[in-house]
Image 1 (cartoon, helix red, strand yellow):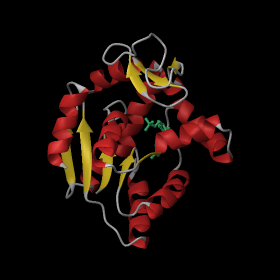
Image 2 (cartoon, protein in one colour):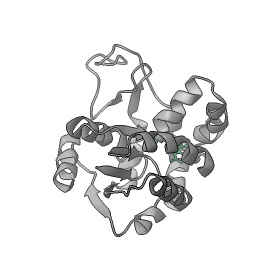
Image 3 (cartoon, rainbow, N blue to C red):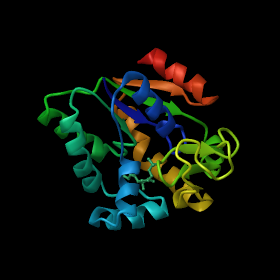
Length: 208
Ligand code: AMP
C-alpha cells in the first residue's frame, strides 16, 4: 500500500500514521520528523530548514522533494507519506519520483478537523525529546507529568506549537496545502478527524 496522509496541522496525521504503520507493517516517512532530526543534528539541511520551521512556514519544495526520493525508492513496495507532499509543486515532484520507480499511489487519506479544534490540539501537544512519541496534556496525557511513558525521555512543547506559529502554519495550510485536495480528487478519501484517536483510526482502517 502506497499512501499519502493529508490534512491541516494538528489533524492527527502523525498519530494515525504511526498506527497505520504498526497495524499494516508499512514504513512511515514524516518530513516533519526528518527535518526536526536534521535541525537537532545541526546538518546543513537542518540549518536551512530551521528558519522556515520556527516561523511556521513551509520549507522550500526542492529541499523536501530531494529528501523523500531515497526513502521512496528503497521502499517502493509500500510506504506512508506523512506531511508530504504539502504543495502542488511537491506533488509534481512526487510524480517524478514515482515514475522513476515505476509505481503509483494507492490512496490519499485526507483527515479533516475544524480550525478551532486544531488550535486546541496543537497548543496542548507535547513530544518526547528522545523517541518522538506524541502526547496531549488534556486528551492523551503521559502517566507521569512531563515524562514519556515509552522511554522516560522528557516531554517538551515544539516551538512551532506556540500560538502565533500555529496561526502561520494554518495560513500555510490554507494557501499551499489545501489545493492538494482538488489535485488528488480522483484518489482522495476524506476521513472525519474529530473524536477519539481510536474512533478516527477505525474510520481510516475501514477505508484502507
Ligand atoms: P509537521 O511535523 O508535519 O507538522 O511539520 C512541521 C514543520 O515542518 C512544518 O510547519 C514545515 O515548516 C516543515 N515541513 C514538514 N513537512 C514539510 C513539507 N512537506 N514541505 C514543507 N515544509 C514541511
